[in-house]
Each structure stands twice: as C-alpha cells, then as structure tokens.
Length: 248
Image: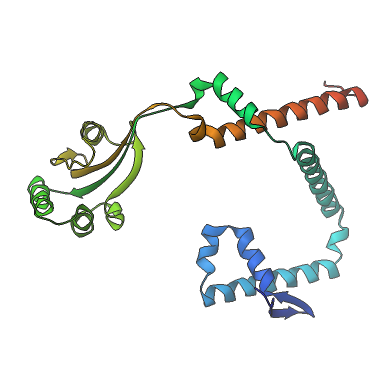
C-alpha cells in the first residue's frame, strides 16, 4: 500500500497497513483468505492491537529480563545463525549448460516418464441417463456443456476436465477404458463404483525418456543441490581440522 496508512495506535505506537499485510503474509495464503473482507481486516487489526498490548505489558513487567526468555532468545539466535551461515556458504552456486547435459546423459534412467492422458468425464448414476447424454452430445451439445449440465462430479465446474493423469491414478475400470481410447473419442458408458462415466480423451502423451529440455529445470535443481552439498562437506572437513571434535 503506497501511503502505509496508520490503522490503530496503542500507547502511542502506530500500527499501519503494512503491519496488516505482514500479518496476512505470515499466516499464509490459505488462512489469509478468511480475512480478505472488511470485517476480516478489522479482526486482523484487533489482533495486532491485542499483541501490542501484550508486548507493552511484558516490557513493563520486565519479562524480557526473565532468565527463561533470555535463554529462548539465545537458542533462537543460535539456530538462526546456523541457518544463516549455511545459506551464506552455499549461496551463488550455479551450473553450466555443459554440466547439466553431462548429468542428464549419465542419469537417463532417472528421467523416464509414464504414458499419460488428458481427459474429461461426465458422471451420472444410471446407464440409461448416460446414453441419453451421449445422444445429446452426438446431436450437437458440447461435451463441456453436457458436463456442466448433468455431471455429479465436482469437475463439472471445469467442463468435466480431469487434467493429466497416469496409470494408477484412476479406478481400474475408468483407467482401462481411457487408456484404450483414441484421441478425440467419446466412450460408451463406463461403470465404476461411483456410477457411470462418459469419457472424452483429449490428448495422449506417450511414455519414455524425457528430453533434455523437458527435464532441464529438474536437472538444474539436482546439479546445484549436489554442488551445494559438496561445498558444505568440504567446508565441514576444513572446520574439523580447525576445531576439536569429540563424538561420545
């Protein structure tokens, strides 16, 4: 927020819109969604006020001088410094294109992908109903509109889309039917424990070895992680020579 408007004051301490945004960022997007309304923002402001009141009271009662709190702070500083030192040690590590290609060529077995399908479906309770829907589709009703109109699956909101899936992700009857279809085809009713499905196969992606370009991001992450680990272990060996270590 550009003007960082003050939204509350507690004993002279200002609470701003940026404080509200930071609070929402800290609690994560899923929880923060509950506070996106004006009433929700008001609750966040109230909570920030409550926290500031507790802080002022704690300072007034010198809780920050309590031995238990002092130790907690020291423990937190120790852990933060360890993490910071590790991050500083491994930061800036990179990998060249040649290193990525060399790693890919020597680890091809790790870059296999299963055959996958992109499909949609319509789910209904009765076979007769499914056949009537197929007739409507054959007469011109789009599959997506039919899914929105008739399907009992939540995927209806997306026109029946199931996205991309591989073997083992769907119930056996559905999987068998889908993997035996041609691209663009619409199935006969397929019975499963959930009811009767009408399946439309949009795309078939064959399995096999991923190309270098397909796997490049994954390869980069792995190569950099290995280089970071190597740098870390080298540094640890150096420190073991510098400082005494006893493992009981």
